[in-house]
Image (cartoon, rainbow, N blue to C red; front, side, top):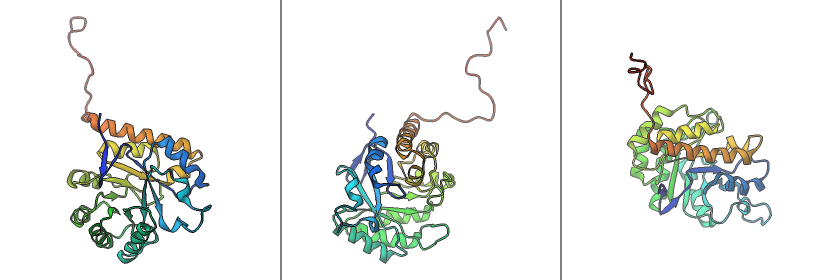
Length: 256
């Protein structure tokens, strides 16, 4: 079955995106990408030390992996735009995940500033993937601003609480004509599988893998969960019922 995900002008076979923070060692990253079959990794630009040949996280990201720099640390649109331009000038490509957060307790994204940054960067040729709360009006504004995908949170970043915003994400999946990539809060493979069964285009996660006892094995589990959820969505889930429905006939057995 031909089921590639297309973002911008790039076709992706894997629908699992992975972050690069919190690992005990960056040297784990190549094996994690291999086992999960992930093709897109996000990295905070502030973690990239381009002046150091030894202490540079990019050394651990295979050349055929799509790099998705993010604007982590930006508190408004101006800062996010500045980070995005710096990433591009540093050779990180034209993909950018807009992440604008000024709330330090829940780390919730600022939709208004995100729309502003998306409009400017998309007009400059960036492939913009904005991280947002799952708000339909914000998502529609991002479509008009030129976003290439929308990344709604499942629950607060790093919380591992799963998809607490599922009803709102369902609305985005139904109404937004862009890939919907569930980002943040996914704590276990069944969460990722659920997102894919709902019809999400992809999932992005970091903490659940990085903080597990065996990150490489967990990465493999997430890769398979995303594949399973996607196949289930394509196959079509059965209808739910509040009463029982027999799987075989109840009449005509022993003349009754």
